[in-house]
Image 1 (tube, helix red, strand yellow):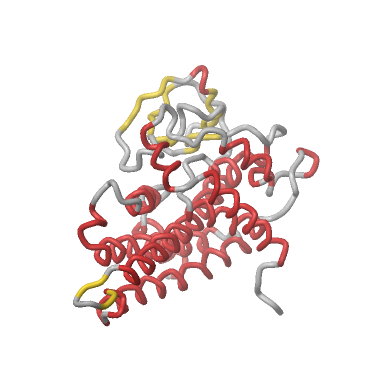
Image 2 (cartoon, rainbow, N blue to C red; image 1 turned 45 degrees about the horizontal axis):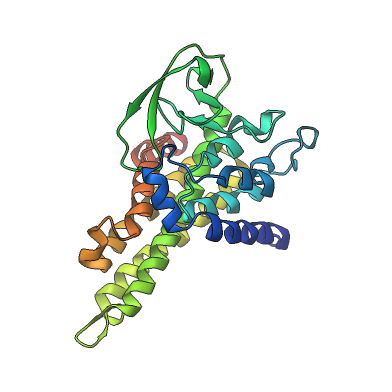
Length: 297
């Protein structure tokens, strides 16, 4: 049996990457931190047009009727670019159950990112209409992922399966973020010189980068397996390892960049802070490790 993504799945991923390189650059992401919405103008419509939000939706609803394996590479790619849109929440959440595949959906258990701009809001209480909801802003480490407490009536909705899929979507995004930060750091250490040689040639730096790469390569298969099975225990394994990989890579990237890595003028923090935010969303590493332990002990 061959365990690999199909050429069509890889081609779809590459098409999304080409779009995001043009429409969600670091400069555009930086602008999203300070604009009125925290999002990239026009990006959502382009993601809808490409079909990213329609992967899981039934063909009767205008979707592709595919599975999570067809979606997971796309979500990983949105992590790689720290896309400031509720794409995981929509494409992997209740979006596939809606007739209108253009609707964006903000999802959270207590604090909800993008609740001020999404057409629907989904919390642990159910589905809220933004027009009839009161939103209370809360501070967020990620300026393009603004958080809100949602108050108001909600239509009850069975959220367990939806929240599982979204958790897996965040794990995929963490792999993308780790990959992006690692790529940035490798490129930087090839150019930055000390004592007349690139710092990437130092053994200590090589070891740091190798540890980050190993963590990522251990996390990815767990994410891909969970995309096949959608087993809650597999999803927890994936989320725990992906969070570990993204957080470790962020620390390694910060160390290897040195002083420039601590400046907000440098792009690293845009991706590192998204990894911090996702690592505490829908259960942190301890929560998911405990969940796995309960299942196997």
